[in-house]
Length: 99
Image (tube, rainbow, N blue to C red; front, top):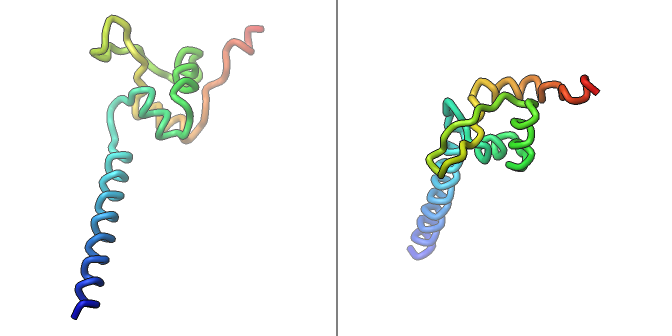
């Protein structure tokens, strides 16, 4: 009888872990209209600094938006731009064309 109880407890612990992981996956895959730089960076597997630089240099299309964290706006990247980046990659570096 003890073995059945241990198996049930072990199974319950596994189900709890699976449920937690599923919640993390759902949160990660939530589609938004716009992503903050940190969210975009996590989705594409890059550092937030790198993604911020891409916005600044025009390598991805980002918009400056008020974030509610002070006077200075922060970069926001649309979901459409995320899809474009995943399909096509970075936009050309215009600085190299002009040089």
